[in-house]
Image 1 (cartoon, one colour):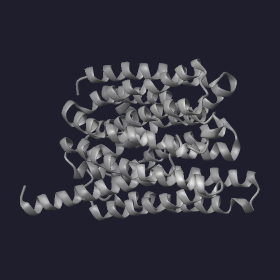
Image 2 (cartoon, one colour):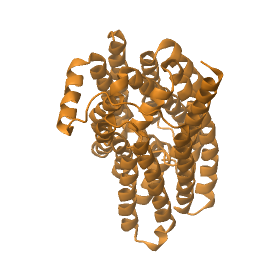
Image 3 (spheres, helix red, strand yellow):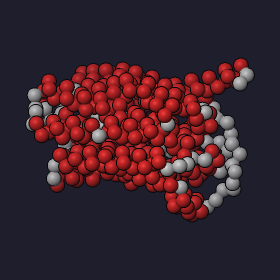
Amino acid sequence: MTKPAARQWRRKFSRIAVAGILFQGGAATVDSATIVSALVHQLTASSFAVGAAAAISRYGWLFPQLIVAHLAQSRARRMPFYSAGAFGRVICLLCLAALLWLSALLPRHITVALFFTIWTAFAFISGIVAVPYNDIVARSVASGRRSRLLAVRFFGGGLLMLLIAGLAHWMLRALPFPAGYALLFLLGAGLLAASAISFLLAGETSVRPTEPRSSFADFLREGLRVLRQDDRFRLFLYARWLSGTATMALPFYILQATRVETLRGDVALFFAAQTVGSLLSNPLWGWWGDRRGKASLLVLAALLGTLAPALTLWWMALGWREPGLTLSWFGMVFFVIGAAGNGDTIAQLGYLMELSPDDRRPAYSGYFNALAAPAALLPMVGALVAQVASFAWVFAISLCAACFQVAALRRLIAVKS
């Protein structure tokens, strides 16, 4: 590589990394496992509403990708799709901040209805970003450096998220409810806007579509053919469904942690523990993914993911309610959630990039995420299980699914490409 080419590559790498770091900070302000779950529970006092908010966030991120993939596959440039989603979600987050700031002027049921309306728009518009982002990054960064890029992104993002956690702790304690959340969302909108600008500055190399634009029906039929004939794709999808089942409990950990009334103002501390887990594990995930493979990293992250439900079930069985002990115990739980979630995200993004043919990457991303999307609704099932039976059943199902996920991923490793 010539010096000008190397300089250009480093500039592109750094801008993509900075965009990812700023995105991590912005996304932290609307973390569905802590910040949003606590907000919705304070607004509604309903565990089903908490599950619904988490489900909307996940499903909205995944579902639009099939449509975006069909549109992007035959286009020479994918950045316009990214821009639409990136700046659209900033506008939605600004609207959420304004709604919460002005909520004292509205009846509570109107505030809740408007919140879920804007939150749904935010989730679905955010989903537009994923397909073009994955494709542009995969064409910009060689396979052997992608885990490194993701590790840099998540390490820098983790440091920024720690700062966000500190600011969130101050905002949520210093300001009356829900003004603290409004200010937090306003901060998130600014970070997401800066992230989008950095990614746009990195640019993209236009591609020549390898095939003419097909009808949407033909596009769907091709997806079914991929599902039938690509064993790795199919096993990876099964593992994602099991992962969705395992993580359906995510919005409910914070409800268990804050059952002790004196800890209800400490939501940001649990988020900080989650961030520290993500941050400290990051160098290991980056090294492991590039040296030992993304599939192997998926297995390791899934194994670690069994600990959070197991620790929560143990705490529930012991019946502890002492504030200091509960804070320490669930600090450990959220530390594990952060480490496992970060490893899983790095591995999943990297593995999907490698699994997808270079000329069909938008299509494969769309197929995979659309087929995995229904699993995103499982937090609502978890809320129903909690209401009909108990939260212990939710965490027990999560633990069983995590164990089955490990088995499915071990089979995936055995399948030859």
